Structure formats: structure tokens, C-alpha cells
Length: 71
Length: 372
Image (cartoon, rainbow over all chains, first blue to last red; front, side, top):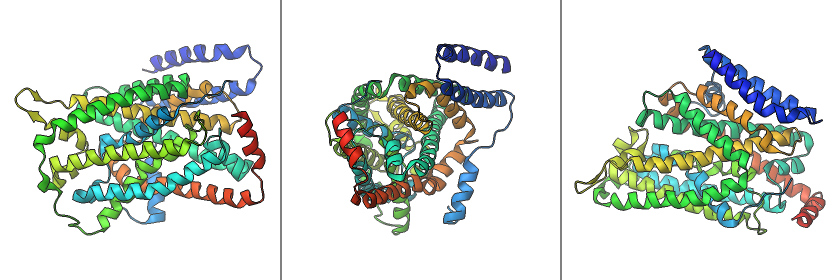
């Protein structure tokens, strides 16, 4: 599974970053690199069956804190 | 970059498809039981003033979207802060809708398929259409709405023999409180989610038509949702309705005309798929636009794939089960969405009215008129 994820990301990086290399605008490269890194990290964690905390429970507890208990 | 603009009809179709979105799959205002239709009408009445605020802001700055307006009205710093909130809201909404549809497919059609596959396929389609741009999205929206309305009309026509009007009684049997709760729920999901659309529909080729596009599309979609909800409740009854996750699907599966037209629930999948797809792609589009605005970058197509992948992963980790999903959608979601749908727009509008008196926005309004 991990191998598949890494392969797919290599393809994505090749396709998405190759047109950017010639350009001078380095900010795009960094932003895109950062986003790719985030999604790659999540993909690797998911492929290793790591439980990633969902934002649902914090949202629920915050809304319970402000508006009281919901049914 | 060439400026993109869409026609009035296309904008109306986008608004309608967006509002129908996942609410057709999941149903709305289930808390109100038999009085669900009162809740939906109340929710539509509650949404109207909010729509007027959204469109007033859009029309005051022609050719500019939600994120431009936030920055112009609130200033650079606070504008960016609120932009971060809206980027999160649209990303989260895209993930929620994607997950809603995937749960539907997983529960009803493909129980053995891993849910991630369904999420990924929908996400990649959305990335594709976002990369193609809002014009392509609007044009295909116009085509798809015809298909959606065709299927809905046929299914409603076929369900007439199964209707039992006794199911609508008792009228206000549980008092007003569930009705108001249901109205609030239907207001938050789906009607006031239109605030996300203000990031997408901003340059309609005829000026001053934004309000008309939003209002007509809203009334259209509201009418469809109201009709289908009433159909569901008349066909299934309140008790059964509250025990099912996908009321429209169950209602259609009961249709039986003679011996040869039955089990036609596959057709409503078309409707669910189309509307959910448009909602996901509009949310993703708005999210990428907001992200670009945050970093002052013009070409939103650049980051579509990356943000789309993050959206897919978010929708995968967001719930553990369908029970958790429905608890969240009809419980905490309405409180969570309230600041984005009501609080921020009203603050922006009030600040706009105050600052307008001192003539702060003259330059923006004149400039954009010339550009148009």
C-alpha cells in the first residue's frame, strides 16, 4: 500500500512540478510543495493504518460549550 | 488572465444545484416530523434576508468575489483572518458533502467497496472541473439541471398512486419547538450554505443580475426540496421517515406501477450524484480561490489538485460511521455553521454601511465599473 502511495505521489510531483521549474516565481513552488507535503503525509499515515483525529469531535464540543447540550 | 463570466441562466442553475446538493440525499429538518414542510417554509423565509445581504454586498462591488470584498471592507489583516475561516468552511463543506454521498453509495449500492475509492473518484472529478474553470462548471450545470429535473418530475409523477395524505396529520402535534428546531436546521443546511456560492458567482455578464440569480435559484431549489420532502412524508409517514438515513431513496424504492415499473430507485442515484458533484466542485472552487487570495496569487487552477486531495483525505477521516455523520449533520452542524452563514456576513455588511458613509469605497466601485 505504501509503495502505491509513493508511486502515485511521484507521478503527481512529476506532472505538477515540471512546468513550474523553468519559471522564476518561487512562491508558487513553495506553496505547492507545502500542500503536496501535507497531503502526502496524510496519505502515508492512512496507508499505515494510523488513526488520524477527526475535526468533528472538537467542533461538537466547542458548539456544546457555547450553545449547551444538543439532542 | 482572461476574466471569466457566466450568464444569468447558468448562474441560476448553479445556485439551484448547489442548494439541492446533499440535502436531497439526506433530507432536511427531520426533527419536525409531520410538520417538516412548515419548517422548510420557515427556513426559506429566514434565508431570504441573508440572501439579500449577500447579494447586496456582491452588487456593491461588481466583478469582485467574497474574498475581495472581505479584504476591501474589513481591511488587509482582518480580511485575511476571515478569509482563513471561509477557506476552512468551504473545504470542510466539500468534505462533508463528499462523505454524505459516499456513505449513501456505500450503504445502498456498493457495501463491499472501500469508501475511500468512492471519495477519491468524486474528488478527482471535482478537481478536473475546477481546473476547467467556473465557465465549464456553469455550462455543464445548465445541462445537468435539465436531467435532474426530468428525473425528479418522472419520479414524482409515478409516486402519485402511493400517496397517503393521512400521513400529514397531526398538524403541529408536538408543538412549535420541534418545528423551530427543524427550521433552524434546514436554514443551516442547506439554504444558508449559499454564502459559499458568493465566492463563485460574482461576475455575471449582465450587471446587477447577481441578486436575481441568487433569488431565482434559491426559490427553485427550495421549491424542489419542499416538494420532495412533502412527497417523502406523505409516502412514508413520519415514524418511518425518522428511522431511515436516505428518505428520498426509500420513498422511490416503494414506487410500483402495475407489475412492470418497480424498483426504480436507481434513477434517483443520478439526481444525488449530479447535485452532490456540483456542490463538491463549487466548494472546492471557492476553497482554491480563497487559498490563492490568501497568498496573493492569481491563477487558482494551480493548486486545485493539491487542495482536492486534502479534501478527499479530510472527508475520509472526518467520520467513523454513518451514525456519527447524521448526528453531526442534524445536531452540532447548525451551530457550527451559524457564524459563517450569519455572523460574519452581517458584520461585513454593517462595517460596509458604516465605512460607505465616509466614501471609502468610491474608488473600488468606480474602477470596477470601468473594468467591466
